[in-house]
Image (cartoon, rainbow, N blue to C red):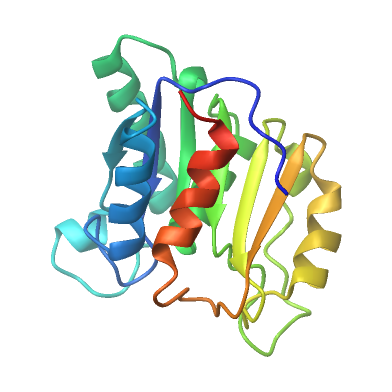
Length: 194
């Protein structure tokens, strides 16, 4: 059972996985679940998608897009970015975590299907920034995710010096096919009912 986040955020910025857009089913499910908890939601697209390209931009461009989207969304809500939960799915979740590690203030990180390493390459971890994350984190992953097993992800997140919660979706792979609602319910439950 995941521990709940201490405070309900004013809003949640959600970023899609690689090759997907802000209308990907995982983000739509998260949007609906968080909106039902009276959390304002903004789903973002990365610059490469807005330009009609399929290949993701380089990491600095993606992280900058997260910063700009979070700053703009917070301003619309009349709050600072420290009142926003940031996250999303796979690559989008990773870029949000890097933005926070690099100093973007946030209330929490919500990381669905975090891509810990490329499939079949467990020695290529995407965790160098983890020790710089100082906000509560929720990781929601399938227990059959080729991008990181429950054991690998649990071990890796021990380097995060903030509260970390995990929810494992039984039988779920990286795509969490037909399990978007379960992942969204886990995220909404972490923030608690209001």
